[in-house]
Length: 413
Figure 1 (cartoon, rainbow, N blue to C red):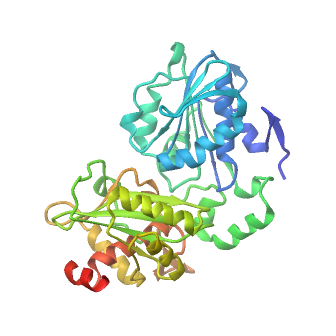
Figure 2 (spheres, rainbow, N blue to C red):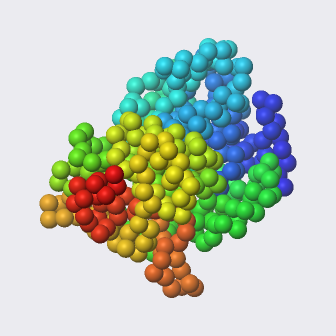
């Protein structure tokens, strides 16, 4: 077990400590879930704001920026972690701007990375990107141009669980540049996690998914369920503003993520994923409140949910969110999604994703067929599937056993 060390009155174990004190201008802490990556990233940010990076003294007061893939992830995890660690070193938090001010006058900007173009502007001393494997590669390119406060070369670092061999792997592993450093850590390396929690994850996760989520390995997933999916083809920033119908797909979760995905259907029957809500450790009462908020924001007409939890469906309905048990025929649903992913005669697919739906996009590149030995089975692996399951429910509501909408409405009422 790693020996705990302290800095800023914070207990850090070996790999966390090494990362916080890393001297490279470009660094990644890449590890399994629960390995304490965000704590190390926040500690490094706080030290930088106080004038220290990897044993080097830097000028203060300075300006740093911290981001997460989406605003909910920033609000619920990254920002919360930083504020917990910084404590009363923060003398002011300007909520309208999401800017923290420290005792020494340094400031930290907190931003969502879902639109890289909106990150242009400030001149920074450092930048920390949390869960960065979910980012567009453009984020790093934009932020590198910002790291020049006081005319000095700034620092960038990222904390993340890997998501396939994407831009993090390409920039920090393949290119092997001298000032680029990657530190890997396993879930089991964290001595502050309960053994029962680690054991439960090791029992639930297998194969490539376990290597990625628990060992922090960069995995090239084989036997993808949706090889048709391409970020270049299916991901867009241009979402229509008018839809003839809006629905949602729901996959329940607590230890594993729960998901609500909102879809808009245009007049030409094209389907757009316009919002995803993705979180762990939310009870059904909280999810029902979230569903009501989403219904009001997006004018969702129906929710289609995993039918295995009828009491949860009832909770949604009690909140005023019209919810039905979805068609959960897996093979039929996968084929329905595949048909929508196919590029039509007009050169466009019939299923598009808003680029801020980072978890859905990541899952599409990792969702695999199960294996027996070396042979692929005709069923998907139960991993990287929470967003994909919610998508099947929504697509089947539209494309499965089609009936005119008017017939459905009169029967539901």
